Amino acid sequence: MDEAVFDDTVREMLHDPKVLQMQQFRHHVSSNTLSHCIYVTKVAGRIASKMHLHVHEEDLARGCMLHDFYLYSVKDSGFSAYHHGTCHAGVALNNAEKEYGDLSEIEKNMIYSHMWPLNLTHLPRYKESVLICLADKYCAVREFMHAAPIYLPAEAAG
Image (cartoon, rainbow, N blue to C red):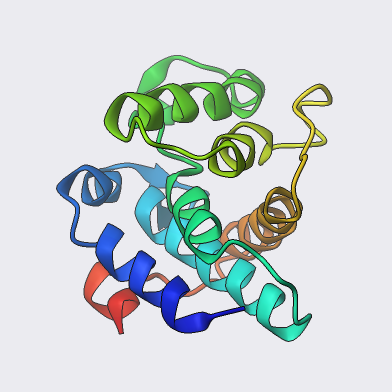
């Protein structure tokens, strides 16, 4: 994996006001959506690097950063936890396609399938999609246990 390309893509996204608005929304008890997406991105990148996987670095970084781009407060939405869990990937994909019309097929699949196996029909079709599934579950468990780092954009950019 070319970590420089991966890191540059993440830094570029962290300068985007559309991405930064995810800071407004609480996520997994101890986090916010942006911090969670940064954490997932870092973990997925580490897994790919440690396993010496050939991945599309830009797609991996962008898909991870946008996987929870649903832009609403779960608490205020009126959705049950189950409804949010099964529907937010589709909402995030729709929002990402509206804001970033140039999403690759890998990025689209990563966003749409990141909740697999909860969404049994949203199959991960690329290794980048499998990486986000693994990283997202790992990070979510750590966030629920208050054991995850909280990343602010300035910290993540470095």
